[in-house]
Image 1 (tube, helix red, strand yellow):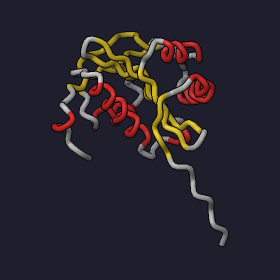
Image 2 (cartoon, one colour):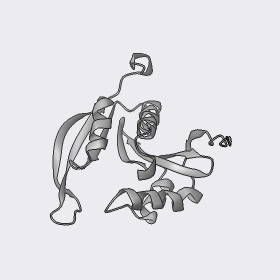
Image 3 (spheres, one colour):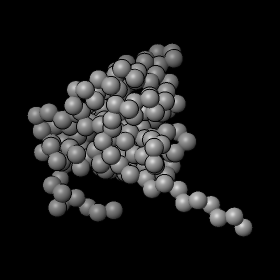
Image 4 (tube, one colour):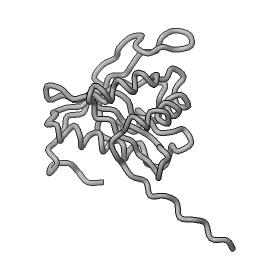
Length: 163
């Protein structure tokens, strides 16, 4: 029997400019209408909280959060399609929520496509609630797709249930 090499540990870290090529590749693989590399770069240069989940030099997923006036907006949370189903999205979401708390945000908002059932389930499990819809928000192949607007009221870290 041949021993398999130990895989690289998976770690969260801030996104860097030199990560953008891999992040853009994941974005293109995951979405029919992906963000461009320029939009991703603009998020970094604007100072948004942008983090990657990486195994060695390989990026598995990323999250981007904007915070202002005690409110956070989860702009993007994505795991490479080949890496989905391993808890990486949950791990990234927890980091984004921790960052929102660190910035003293009281609530977090996000938009998600109704067709993105896995993401909706993740957000539901994290305690997000649907608070509205944005009609025709997302580009789509035929007609534009609505967005489900979700929100989460943040509890102080001591009041957060542990999983």
